[in-house]
Image (cartoon, rainbow, N blue to C red):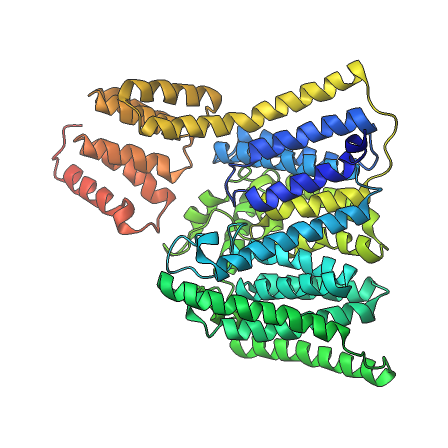
Length: 592
């Protein structure tokens, strides 16, 4: 019974913790099992606690998910639309699980602070001890583990920072210190800007500004020194370093990190200056000078869209790193399909269609509202905006730890204006469970017996939708390495679970080719083209196979359409092959 009483708090914390550590980056590998756990938690909460109040936000997220699912009918990438619908349903379930934590907000805030502190500690430990986190190569040194990408880790540090301001004292100071060190080592400009926004919001709405300022200053000064030292340690912040150098500099960094933590605690205990009118005015002058300096810096350097390197020099660049270009592409796609968009998750086709260089390659425009406009139109954006409104409105006028929780979803939304946070359950889950907890209202009598059957039926249906694409991808991947007869069986099984996916077509074609059944293999490539006629890769695969089996004319037909859909591809990625096929056709050197 005691465990059941703790379920409203344990369930959202467990889901947030699993998402933070095992979210799987931008892939969909965690969606089916995390979504299944969220659905199971909802059923358990209904049975144990009853129906909580405040469902407007989660229901609107579920409607957004349903609209994403409906967009499969017109989507340019229907398999991606299914994935996006599943993701949105999982996010709706996570927000719903948070509703039952309405009476446990302090415990939720403490739990999230501990989880975020553990994530930050693990990421920093990966720099101290190289075996802790595999950075995958010698040329990527931006802090990113365990979430998988630096910008999203930076957003997690922003969450930790605002929670640290709420708790203050020693624990809050240490959390703020670690969060600031990790934030700067991600080199994330969007993360830094989001941190500034949420900290300013905290000081505007909080009644504990002095204590918050002491915590922030006590953490920031040692953090700045530690990061400055880290930038002169090549094994921590430079590319292409040997394992020996990483070990040597990592241990030095670890020692400096500990000294900085001790220094931050010492500063926290130092006597405070009197909060006089002079001190207040000096603080305002410093803030105004910082804002004026930032504006002047941008005015002098200008704003562009060129590529920015993955070094600490990013902080001195005002380039958007292609973001302005991607936003323009998304906007152009929206203007062509304003009501319903081109299908959830299908922006990549717009990117290939409108890009002007092969370097400009992305699957997301790095701006969530613009992405929603391009992919699911004004309907999708309106549903998302309404969901956020109903999740944020109950959080107004909160204080203390509830103010910190209230700022998590706004921090997510601010950062999502410049990045792909929607694709990372690791940073979406904490924001949604926190918002759900503040939007929730006390539950009524527990649901019993037959009353749970409709909810269980819906949960089972959704779990089937979550697991089907995952199984299909797994079987299609296994088919590539299996014997031809086994590969055909696996590919057909994958196709039956996800008929929108292209890999089963290609895996079966490869198996049929191994058996010498080239015409049947080519038919699979043609089937993939018919399934996704707007996808350049389906045309490229068909054209390449036609060339390989000695059919230059068929290769020309399919590769021509490929070059139309992706006009700025690298020459060695289909363009050269198309030119060879065209030459053969013009010289009448073909038999098919």
